[in-house]
Length: 339
Image (cartoon, rainbow, N blue to C red; front, side, top):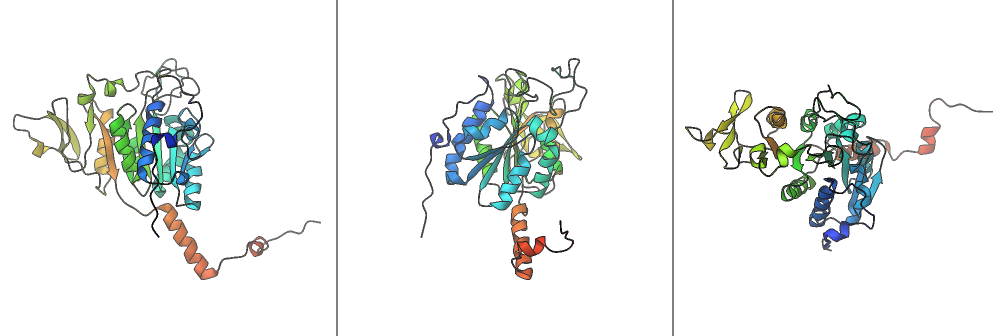
């Protein structure tokens, strides 16, 4: 018997809840992109679960018409892991922010990624704590003046993509809230990945950190400030496609095309490189003067999934020892009789 894939529209993934974000917030654009992509995946709506922690981004489960779980601060990866292990047939997505995922939830995030749990993680990075009204976050730049750092932050910021790669994440990507066609394309690629997919989304908080990414998003500079990654294509950027990234020993360098330098001299993007060293260099580009901000898929490799290995281990032990007896287990070993 064959089953027909469900046919959905964006409206099918919208809820009757009032969306309670500040007018102009970048979260609206991300929500719209997700609600546009989900119908195209051919997955029954009841198979989706959206999990979140605490923060503006963490209201996401209320606004996507699927199953959802609003957890406590930083614990979304742990909750999502439990869901995926118990029900590997479900499509589990995590909506989180730079504070939720990289501060109190930092350990949960890196261990979920190293285990390669089949979860899709959307990290909304606005470089600020928005829900609690404007404190600096783990991704805020050095010198950031905020309510909690009136004289400027002295902390070095996390680079989320570098952190994910350091945890051996098998899919690492970046997009921007207002780059809608690009964001939707990245979300579809993340959805098609079998293991942990980590997508950083540069997002504006127009109330507490307006212009956080204007050096990347402003129309007059975006072509020179961003590098769109395409598998198998040379690293070319610039308004006139006249700049590129060339290998230089164990590093990369920015070059101008012409005067003896052609696209043949440039690095060719390989998102499937099993060695994360190349993707690591890409992930640190925007922290270096003169380099563009790469957007797209940095790394996409296949590796065993945690939930698959757990299920296989349970089957092996069950075949060897039998299904087990809970009552016998509870009364085994040391016991006490209370009188």
